[in-house]
Amino acid sequence: MAPSLHDVCCDHRDEIASLAEMLAQLPVDKWHATTPAPGWAIRDQVAHLAMFDERALWSIADPDRFAADRESLMSGDKYLEIHKQWGSMEPAQLFQRWRDGAVALNEVATQADPATRCEWYGPPMSITSKMTARIMETWAHAHDVADALNVAVTFSSRLRHVAHIGVRSRAFAFAANSQQVPTTEPYVELHTPSGDVWTWGDSQSDDIVRGPALGFCQLVTQRRHIDDTGVTAEGEGAIAWMKIAQAFAGPPGRGRAPGQFTVAT
Image (cartoon, rainbow, N blue to C red; front, side):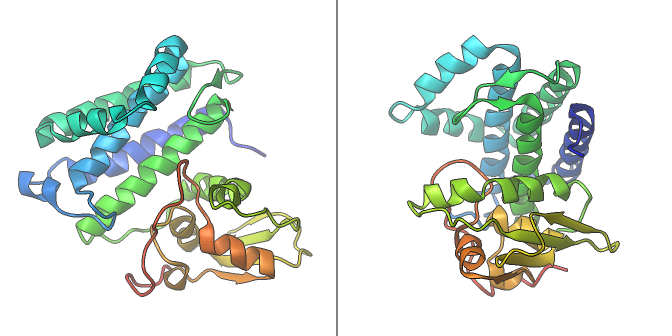
């Protein structure tokens, strides 16, 4: 059964708290520490989250404002200009603005009609899908922060949302890489530390992806190379997918190099 908007918002709130815990006592100099994302320091990761949490709130509460901003943002260097403005804040101010904005987004979404449809930078989506995507984005950028601080990234049940987006974004990943989508739907089987098994698709499929849930989420958000995830792929289509898997919007990412990190468990 698909999670309710209430459940998704509860998990989003917990994801905010998890990142806030890492950032709250961070010395000023650590905000300038480089993350595995080329050219991005910790402050850039938080700035990106804050910027798009704000726009996610507009997409729910003020669609006209979001639409006008989207048109402006997609023209010229406006995106880089606004991102730079966020990133140039003093760390304490940036932290407060990000956390306050993320909590405000969560509160608005929690009180919204579950039937609400939201505009975004691709096709409109349900508000539940919107908030599921914010969980994924928050977790992925928090992952980069953790890597920069040498903090171990561990499993949480909230990763089911990230894994779901990773599976559902398969066609998008092929389109983003100008490749034809394989006709065979893959079977995805993910294992959690507690022994639970999460599955998508038909177990009789010739294309199979298996592995730890954490590793799969790291792979589809391009925070780890497949060699460092414990994820395996069988079948031509599944192998091709795992090479380009991408749960986030935008052009194809650069991902990580094989052997850059230890294998997920």
